Image (tube, rainbow, N blue to C red; front, side):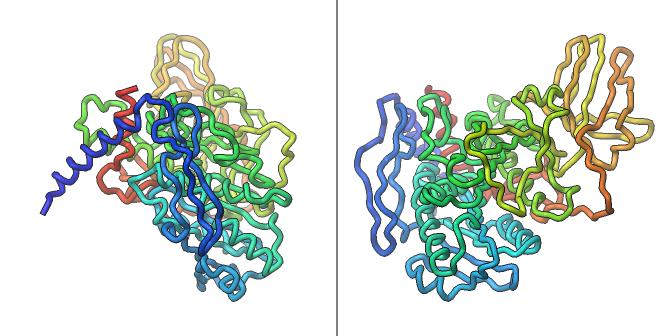
Amino acid sequence: MISVGHRWRATLLLSVLLAIGLCSRSKRFLCFTDEVCYDEPLNVGCFDRVSFGRFCQHVYLPMSPETIGPNFTITNSDDPFFHHHINIFNLTDQVTTAWFPRANDVTFIIHGFGESQKLWMRYVRDAIVRLEQQTVILVYWGKGSTHPNYFQAAANTRVVGKIIAKLIETISEIHGIPYDRFRLVGFSLGAHVAGFVGKQFNKTKIGAIYGLDPAGPLFSEGNPNRFYKAVPRDERLDRGDADYVEILHTSGDNFMHAGAGSHFQWGDVDFYANGGEHQPGCHIEYLKFFTFSTEQMMDDFWKTMSCSHAMAYHAFFHSITENFLERHVAFECASKEDWTYGRCVNGETMEFGFKRFTPIANKASPQRKYFFGTLRNGTRGVHVNVEVENLEDLRVPRNWKVDFANISVEFVLQLPAISEHLVLPPGNHTFVAVVSEEHLEVIDGAELHIDSSSTARFTAFGVQYPTTTMETTTSPFLSEGLHEDDDPLEKSGALNDGNLPTWISICAFICFAVL
């Protein structure tokens, strides 16, 4: 019997060999012109290998619908404890016998890479059916998204999108539900699945798509390396895929910097939580990888990426509520730097997340960017403009604890880069931070002498005072929040099941060294 250690070493060796091949500088390595067609038992058409620049976007051809074997679980607001399952290979009969109240909108929830039947999907479903009359369909495509082969999973998104589109067409035809009353919620690779669904509807668009930190590697320019060129709109999620496309960015940095998402604007409205690249409470120890063992380096890398990535569906869950105190209010802003340094405090505001109606975007209008901050556990806080006057260099940590009399208040800074602190040279500075609402009365309008040479003034902005008292809730799958000492893989299951690091992260580091 082979020991775990030997299996890990064997996996590492194979990973290195594969990585060297994938990082080859040969033109369009592993990019061929062949294609595959699937017409029986479910006709989803033909697919070829997609290439941009010197690399194939998808090294692999997508698997067949039978191999992927997606499963659809249907739940209605009228009977939320009854779940109906659909077999995609007998769509007409299955959809005919399923219960689709004509008055209900229909929302699909689609997971990402390495996931299958994750708790977050069920919690989001339950929140939606409690909020309004809805039919919610959970899409499980675990056989097509399982790790370690991210390249294969990325290719499979096209087939899964075609399958869901077939299901929507069948539901609409049999039950008379118009296309604009369908909504799609996709996380990571699932966001691109939603995009491929929307591309199948040209005359009448799907109502809305919510892209929760859409996957960046292989779908955005320069990610994971410089050989990947800009990806055309028809090969990724795009604002034209539905009447309204809303996107949240939580880990939009490049894969080499532990980013699983993308920072590019792909929606009608794009929201950037805490700058959209790295989330507070998600450690970035992997940056010190030269001092760690290989195993520790990969483990830290994966945890960092998964933690920020998972914050996307955590924030989305909090938007599905009658309690406006839990919803994230964002501010229109041109850039992350402008947001960081308090230049957007008077900008237009908009709530992020699930809408009780389907907004119809003006496709002729420019795309819009909104920024908001969160506390360390991802929940909503009060945005604070901090004006600092300092005579000497002042080092302010991301999680800045300040004492007001006998009350200790923690601020979460909105930082412009991958850093755990902000260094302010002598002068006058303004930046944005987030603080718990319970400390609002203490800090709003307060002035504080930080030390003998530095003074700070705090002004809350964009505050919405409640007209009634409501009890706030905590996300059930992140009830303790995400903190530096937590294992985000165990809590969120965002990217895999917490086993040994998969080959794609190792491949990324080898590529980084070779290129």
